[in-house]
Image (tube, rainbow, N blue to C red; front, side, top):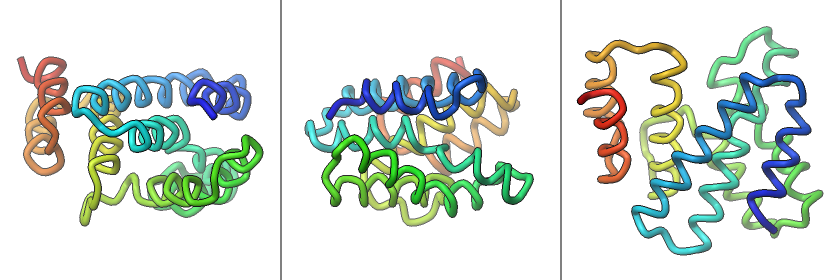
Length: 162
């Protein structure tokens, strides 16, 4: 299965919501780039790309259920929706479980336990910094507290700190 098929399904899922579609496409592009620059093995690169495309899949349900897109609700609601979507595309159960773990933790910045998880968080921050119009001091704090990959730091610095 390919990331392009998941991308197509995610665009269908968020049809009409240009903001959300643009967000996950930007996170996907940064995650894919960082993963390639960090030389992830092929299976981890695919996990990263699929997780980047689906990381915010819980927002729609969170807004309906809780009138909020808060990270904790995304983490809570996203995995079940992603599991259904990825199962319909015949992804392996273990792979789906790994994607769901990342969705369930992408707003949890303690105990980041894999390079894929780290890159997903960094890519999401790179996009959110722009979308939330964060100031330079906030970006520096995020860089120092969150960023670990050489490629992610380089992109962050070139975008916001140069």
